[in-house]
Length: 84
Image 1: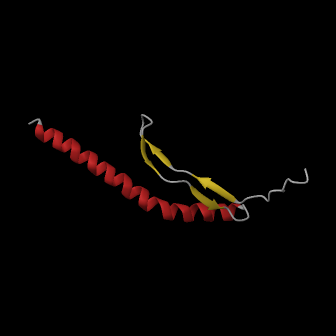
Image 2 (image 1 turned 180 degrees about the vertical axis):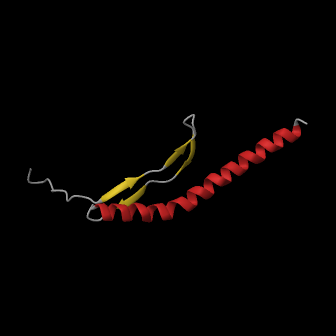
Image 3 (image 1 turned 90 degrees about the vertical axis):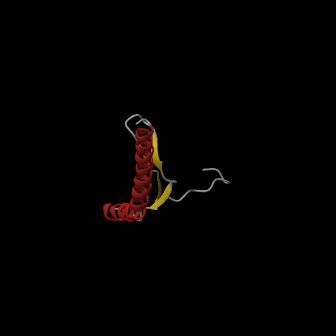
C-alpha cells in the first residue's frame, strides 16, 4: 500500500433497497435505500437488524400499496359506472 493510501476498516453497514413490481415488471412501490447496521455480522445480529428494518418499513409499505389499490379500484369502478 502506498504512503498516501489509507487502509479502510471493514464496514458492517449494508444498503437495503425494496422494490415491489407487478407481474409485468412495473414498479408498484419503492422505498429509499436504507442503511442497515449488521453489528458483528453474526447470524443473531443480522436477524435482529432485518427484524428491526421489517418492523419499521412494512407498515408504511403496506399502507402505500393499499392506497394505490384503493385508487385503482375507484378508477375502475368510475369507468364501469360511466359506461352504463
